[in-house]
Length: 386
Image (cartoon, rainbow, N blue to C red; front, side, top):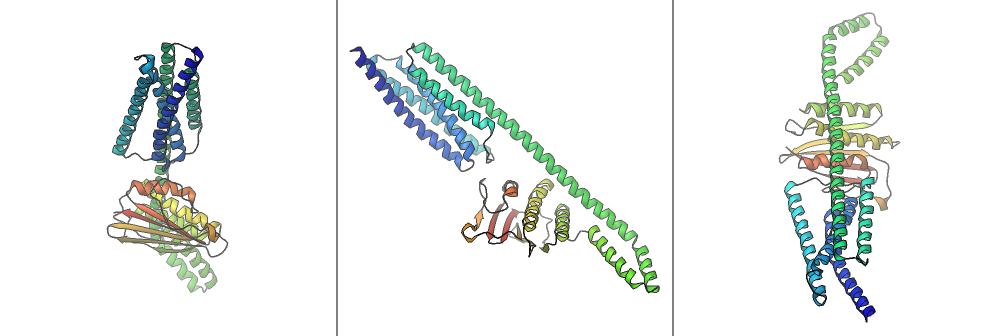
């Protein structure tokens, strides 16, 4: 008779565990899918962490509630405990969702790292420990103490891992900001040097004219031709080839288009007045620097017909920047179509390395961008509010 009683209790426990597991899985799937569109890795880590916490809570409430009833009503009270546990976790989901929407935090995609793998491994370990202790022939107080300690240790670990990730993210952000400031300083210094050398050129212009007059008077036309060629190259390198009204944009274009000229890339440029462009200098460097670097890099892989086409226009209080360039031809079956980049997903359209930074800057300014790959032509259009 005792064996049947034990078997019945085990069967009842398994039934409740299965019911609890189904409820936990449903809530975990919701948590995973709410984060999945931003980052698959973080969705997996958050899902395993959430499942472990709710699994621990279920068992703690299960044991607590079973102590308030006799054997005949134990199943009902244990179910009440599991329902209470689920209610707590549902309230937690609602709370964090409301707080997240209120802060409008920027969700970033992530790759697998040591801390993420450790969190998943710890989650599996804790779940296995809970299952093991459930089948131990031990007193209720002992089981409850062990489960509470496991929950405390696991929550402390999650908090520590979260704080560590925040510190790492902050360090990366500070490093990126420092790099952007350094890059901006370099371009601004380049502009200042260009203006300074241009003033020196104008100051020495009279001497150049006198020398050319001497060469003409002495009929040294070949020397004059060489001198004019060298003088023309100096003028090109000392002056900014465009005037958009934004000194950082002018410096960037001057530097990148100078590289394009040296690499034999044909350039077509049409600018509008950018005095209303209000984004920060480091953001301009990060945005346009990546756009132009991507176009230069793509052209380097092409043997013939290298070109860059840069167009800027102003429409309805917005600036539209379009950059077209030649790229290595792709097969028709892998040809990318026009896509909008509204989330933090990886764009599979060729210029993948710089698009992450471009996307972050554009969305941070309240703008949008689209990319298109048509066989051997790559096009990106950026819209920025004034």
